[in-house]
Length: 369
Ligand SMILES: Cc1cc2nc3c(=O)[nH]c(=O)nc-3n(C[C@H](O)[C@H](O)[C@H](O)COP(=O)(O)OP(=O)(O)OC[C@H]3O[C@@H](n4cnc5c(N)ncnc54)[C@H](O)[C@@H]3O)c2cc1C
Figure 1 (tube, protein in one colour):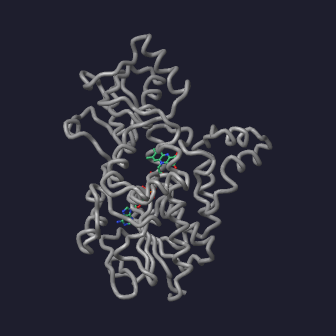
Figure 2 (figure 1 turned 90 degrees about the vertical axis):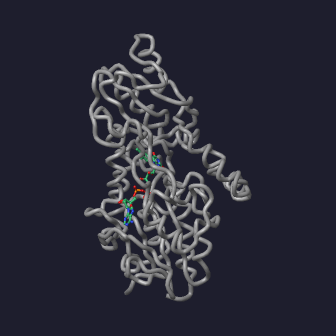
């Protein structure tokens, strides 16, 4: 049996697509997954980052999982295991946040059950080339249907801090010095304020603007059919502007975030400044580089195939396929953060499922193999 489709990138985005393809009836031998890491753990890249900021709970809710159907979510799973309705009650009012351990156990189980390891081959893909009958991936293939899920194109560090010996990125393993500056104001920064304060440090928060406070990383209406329809109907320039605004820092509201900071501020251990000053350690909670141009594979894809772009985004169809390279006989789709043009919250597990289901439908519907 030869592969009917390929996934480039063996992280969570690739894994979610794989689970959807298996659910649609494909066998492991029909799916080639190409990932650059030596291990096949789909959560490997994520695990390191979440561990670096000591993340305990997911920002996503019960439906933030990798399985192909939304139900049963992680709340049901936890409720059944513990014999308690608590998670379901919290989920009913959008207040359930699975623990990181719950999420990672689910990933491990689905990895075993789905046959993922049978399909993963190690290799960094440098070039996706449209050819007769589909796409070649560094000469492998052709594959009629390809989903590219390369994740974020590297960590972002402000230029003036890049060469500073005190600097560490929040997503790299680190401990806390006695006087810490945390640059940034999103979820990672807020997590790091609490971590450093809990470790007994004095914290300065270095920020250019006040963060928005919202539970999810994108406003809830943009996860809904109606909100998404409005987004898809938005002309290109304002759509890019909207995506830029959505990229501004935010973290959830709530006393568990505010109380430790307020207490530390009263004790003189937390303040907001515009500059790290004399801090012993500078933690850059400044996220990732942004835009397809920072990813060599996507940059080359755009350059060689003349793909349409708007600002830092590749222009995609509403189902996250690349219009110029997709028709009734073949599919090129993007997943994860490069799919924001089709789904603003593409870099969430729910967003990955949105893309995955549409990709699986196209693969199954395609008459030729
Ligand atoms: C700390 C943190 C917490 C998060 N918490 C949540 C949360 O609670 N809920 C939620 O929904 N989302 C969350 N997210 C967002 C999202 O789920 C993650 O960013 C997720 O890791 C994205 O998956 P991905 O597959 O797109 O990227 P990754 O997981 O980074 O995987 C991409 C993979 O592709 C590989 N790759 C890249 N280029 C190539 C190439 N050319 N050839 C072969 N392989 C390649 C990489 O090596 C990597 O293994 C969080 C993100 C972070 C950083």
